[in-house]
Image 1 (cartoon, one colour):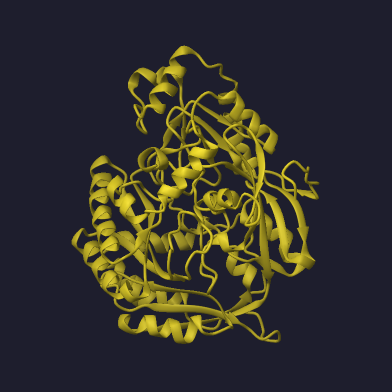
Image 2 (tube, rainbow, N blue to C red):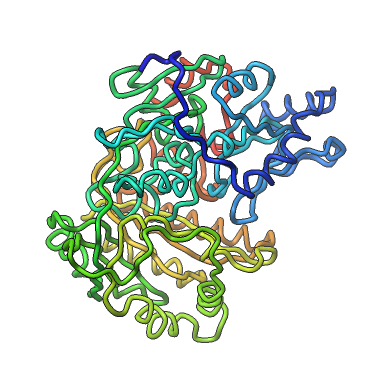
Length: 505
């Protein structure tokens, strides 16, 4: 489709309460004129002179905090705007003299959606359905649409998202920008299911990118964290919604890789899979596989989608008990986890894919918070890496809830791949305090884990806290040279950026 062809909006999804609340302060921030002190802040930010917490002399400017789900590492920006079209994005880029960063659901955890002293584009109001073609199993949406909003359109037609995260709160554009993956067997990162992108470049040009048109720009945008353009529309492959049934197996750690290859990856009926490793020893994977169920198999869950706005008090209490009660890890391993996975389960794929992160949200994140990290290792190295990882976690007394194991084939699309070859991924979910000493302690053991994954031929995922050094990043992602080259060609002044790229690019 030509880049300048207007797309007819066949349906618009109204912004939810969270979007509306975010838009109100944004409008106020956008109305402020630039004065000399704000311009000074922008200049310092461009030169790297602003950290995530700007100098006290700039506080009078009432810079706007852009936070994330953890409550850690808010970035102070000069202005927030809430565009509703690619034209408004282009205009914002034309009118702003400094760095521009893009954000959606704000689930990245280290400043990936904002630049200190810069302009933040909050994309969540760009959530319209552009078109939906059930016969072609394809859809095109504005980048700020959340997966749960898309599922509302797809489910009545018997369709499902082909690849997404395990939870449905994330925006489509943000998911593409970080090149997410989920539990889908054999799918790999989301880039494998993206057909085309609409991008707004740093000069305000609106362009179309796909595997056949501006292919290198397309590859740079998928997993490029906003470095080369603002993703404003995404065209995706879809899949069939189907009944799935759960199988749970507890294995010895040394047996897991062989089990996965034989009984999951080689099984055409396997749809979703992950395995949980529980503290403190992380030695017995509990493998959970969802397989295609016969059409006449009775459902144990009648709802087709997880209802929006549910209360999750019990689930939150479980997380609190596991991380704070004496013997919480034993309680989790011996009682709670078996209870949660016991018995038959038959449901629709869309129900399992529409889970809400609210079930993980604690009552408060003021003094402690829950955080993710993720590491990727080739199958031949996964067992020694898991044991090395467990050693680091035990030595530093990390309050881990679990390590979730997934698998991905090699990434065929992204210019900056986290899976240059087939990998097992290990998603660490843990609790940490929010004080400065705790943050520094996490930084130390994180760098140890990064050293371990590098020693085992792997990489780590970039949407999380930015504790790794520049040298570690360069060693893990040598393809960044190609990303830098594409960025120079479309953004020679370096106007598109964020705290991730300020640190590493």
